[in-house]
Length: 95
Image (cartoon, rainbow, N blue to C red; front, side, top):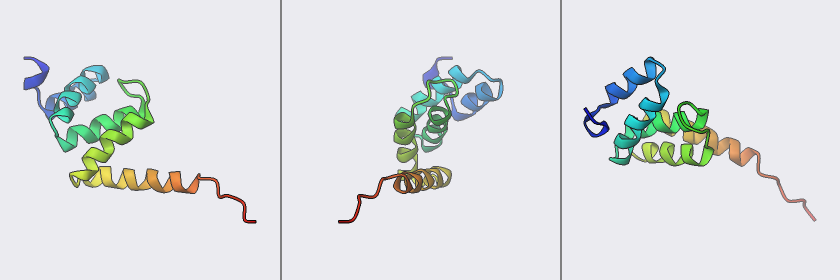
């Protein structure tokens, strides 16, 4: 069975067996096909550096794609990260 015929459940099974690289590979294929749950899972993996190198830009890209498809958890995470980013933007001094 190649990655193109694997499912979200196959990715979850690999993840639960701590085969994170395989889970990321399975979910990447599905995410690129537009699967919101796979996009969310892959985004979380990139955010935390699980099975893939930690990469906030890549994480947010996948999380936003998932959120754009109304994935509730992705929407919450994106909202929190966006708010944290806004809070960390330096305010220019008033003259």
